[in-house]
Image 1 (cartoon, rainbow, N blue to C red):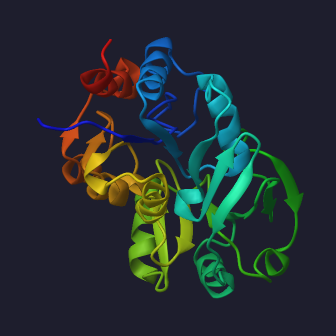
Image 2 (image 1 turned 90 degrees about the vertical axis):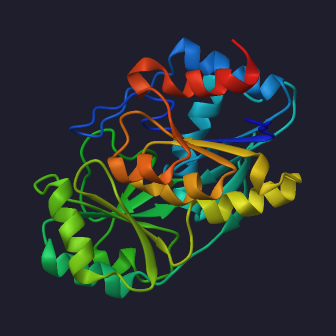
Image 3 (image 1 turned 180 degrees about the horizontal axis):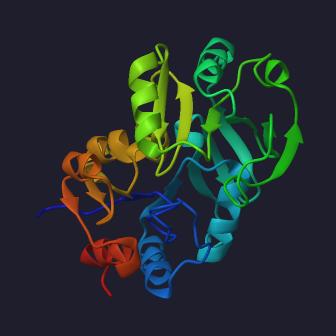
Length: 273
């Protein structure tokens, strides 16, 4: 096909990092083939943008693991499913979008009162009402009650119930409707709530415009439901082989699984081996 990616948007967990589909837990080690393919894209002149549900503190170690940037310039990232964008290094927040989550959080806790709730504290970590399973969120954890968590507008809210299933959370989200927000269900009982209209795609559109890249020249690779809009928006959207069927159907193509270096295979189509 007649396509030359000028911007490569990469999800992290399940795309760059292998993860366990049953638990969502991530192996924080980029396989050599994937790291080398990302670096080839960067060295060929493409803008590499990490686009993820992770917070800023969960993204900067990934840049370091990739060894990017290599030339004293700065790279850009889309964090918190599009609610935050920043440049690195060092971290310089470029944009944030917030919303009032108080009503939605209280409504959800009526349905799952045992759930853990987290709101992002940009550049720091999270404010939480109770501990999350080990390794699921990163940065400093500040313990607060729910009223404190949602007293002011926030960039995102995570609702996590280790005792529920992915299917139960899908049913819960459909039942409640979650009007006025954009929401994503993870591999497990994980509900990520963002401001209405905010997604990886909305943030990437702004980043691409700032970098002078046309939408048609964007290659995006991802594996989760929070990648749907990004894969549909990009000039070429590619789903990982282990992605849910609805994600694969939204993409232009499907590559191999993360265990089989699917991101590296797709990047090698455009940036050699």
